[in-house]
Length: 209
Image 1 (tube, helix red, strand yellow):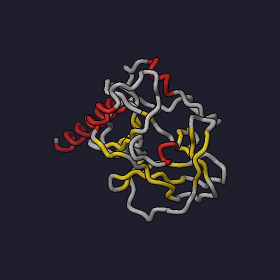
Image 2 (cartoon, rainbow, N blue to C red; image 1 turned 90 degrees about the vertical axis):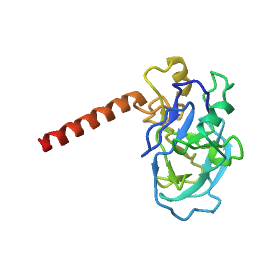
Image 3 (cartoon, one colour; image 1 turned 90 degrees about the horizontal axis):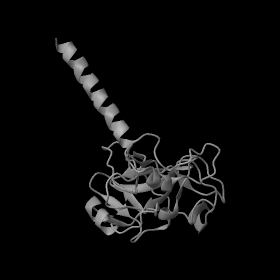
Image 4 (cartoon, rainbow, N blue to C red; image 1 turned 180 degrees about the vertical axis):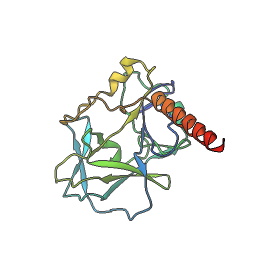
């Protein structure tokens, strides 16, 4: 899911600085270690959303760790180089950002986690733990229900609208926002962060006066 040219959509990370690498998924939060669930909870089959999808093979309780997102662990530079020739009209990605230095290419040595589609009405979330990525249920999932999490692909306000249109969402949820992109652009978030930092600095300065 990536190209080397700048200003392409990627998924956000949680508590680390936002890194705008093209076509890459990010985890939604970090968490403390927990025991992984090893039972056969899912099956892979054709999805009405996109390509193949992952479906619950049995009832999955909220909080269950379903699967780890695995693949070739590479730098962002290697990811850029590896997918430099990717077609401009290809909005599909198996690259997942772990942090500012590491990403996982599930297209190489990946497992069924790479087939979990985006859903605006997500029943799962992605969690980073010790530089590993896990998918966990955020509500009870019934047998036969497709698994999905919010990709929250990052973007910038200067991105080409035609390229952003490649990330339209087809999940069909009642609350579907029509895109896999995050609700706010990276540059808008950075602007808010700068304003917040400046405000904090001004308050501290007044207290010292």
